Length: 128
Image (tube, rainbow, N blue to C red):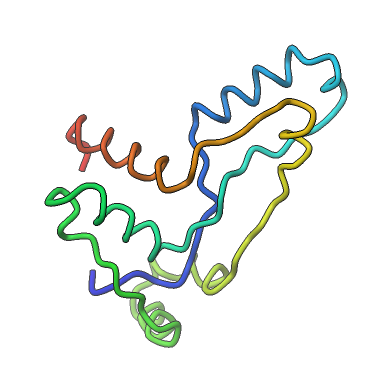
């Protein structure tokens, strides 16, 4: 790929989501409540940069250049697989998790650590 689109994700580790579920099940103050279990927002460019910086040669092929929105929109005309990302192009989603922090003491891992841990696991298991 020549670059990454200007899209992003709220990155959270499955281990942190599991911890959130456990805490919600056993905390009396959580009864009848709902909690969001999202993590820190990262643009794809930031994810790529974290991979390149922390995985060395294993991430040498990860593009860090951000593609202009207009280029992504034009490419989506030809490549239908890009169409589902169009609504998220340039959009920064933010969900609040203060309630989980306050009531359950939940604190997710830093997003860059999560991304790198995930990539290491995929490499270790020869999935990528």
